[in-house]
Length: 86
Image (cartoon, rainbow, N blue to C red):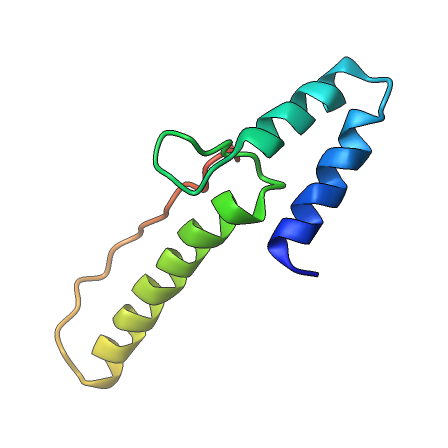
């Protein structure tokens, strides 16, 4: 399902809920824009979650490529926080 179609259906489902928290999530999700400072950072938002994951994937691939080339790579532990997740 395309991202915008999914977003629209999710917002509709959350808006009809009787739970106030669901309706607040619907408003936050529908107001999300693909601009810094206007993102909702909800774990359910594909727009906000896909970018950090793709960046993490690129970093891992770069690291693995340097290992294959035999370049000296310091052994370190690193992580990247995903917005909206603890």
